Image 1 (cartoon, rainbow, N blue to C red):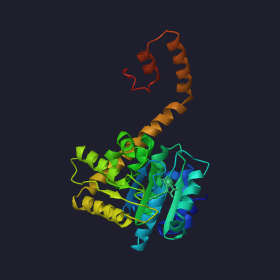
Image 2: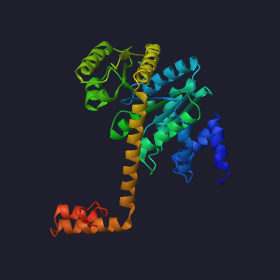
Image 3: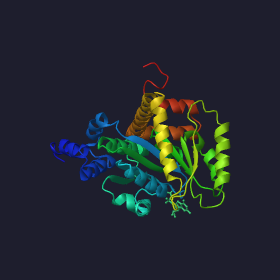
Length: 322
Ligand SMILES: Nc1nc2c(ncn2[C@@H]2O[C@H](COP(=O)(O)OP(=O)(O)O)[C@@H](O)[C@H]2O)c(=O)[nH]1
Ligand SMILES: [Mg+2]
C-alpha cells in the first residue's frame, strides 16, 4: 500500500465505509506492515461502542441468539459490529459458513458488520486480534459491538472477557451447568442465558445456575440475571437485551466503567508485552541453539535443572549481576 492510501482508508472507515473497514480488518488480521499504524490511529477514535462478549459451549445457540439480539438492537436503531471467533477452524471456513447461514438476516443488513476471525496472528494471539477488530468496529461508529467465542479454554476465556458485559449461553443438556462451573464461566458471566428453553430441563438448569451464583462470593453489587431463551421461538430475547442495557446502566451509574476500561486495557497491555517477549525469546536462533545444547547436558546429567534454566534466561533475569 502506498503512503497516502492508509490515512484515506482510515478516514473512510471512520466515516462508516464498509469496504474500508473490511480492508483494515484484513490488514490487521494478516499482520500487515500497516498494522501498528492502524491500531495507533484507531484507539483515539474508540469509546463510543458498548462491547459485549458472548460465550458458551459449541452448539449452545450463541450465533442463533446473537442474530436475534442483533436484530432487536437494529429495531432500536443501533448499528452493530459482530466478530465471531472460532479458533478450532482457522482456515477451513467451516464456522464461518455456518455462522453466515445462521446470521442470514443480520448479515443482509447494511448496518450490521459481521466478521469471522480465526487467525491468532503472531503479534499477540487470538485475543489481541479480536480486540483490534473490536476497536475498529468501535472507531467506525458501531453502537454495539459483539464478540462470539467458544467457552472452552483459557485463550477463549480471555476473548470472552474483552467486553464490558459478558453473556454466558448454556443449554439444558449434557450437564452444561456442571461444565460451566468447571470451565470458569460462572465467574465471568454478567448475564446467563439458558437457551433452548423449548427443550426439557431449562427450569432445572436455571435453578442450578441461580444456586451456584448465590454461593459465589460476589462482592460486586450486580446480581447476574439468569434468563431462559429460545432463539428458535424468539423467546427471552427482549429480556436478554434489557439485561444488557441494565448492566450497562449499572456500570455507568456506579462509576465503575472507567475502572473497568482501565482494567481491560491493563490486561491487554500485559498480554501484549508477554506475547511479544515470548515470541522474541524463542525466535532468537542463539537461544534456540542453546536450548538444544542445554537439553543434551541436562539429559546426560551434566548440569542441574535450575542451572539449565538460568542459562536460558535473558540477561538481567538470570539472577546474575550484569
Ligand atoms: N431447539 C432449539 N434449537 C436451537 C436454539 N438455538 C439454537 N438452536 C440450534 O442449535 C444449533 C446450534 O446453534 P448455533 O447458534 O450454531 O450455536 P453456537 O455454536 O453456540 O453458535 C443449531 O442447529 C440451531 O438451530 C433454541 O433456542 N432451541
Ligand atoms: Mg456460533
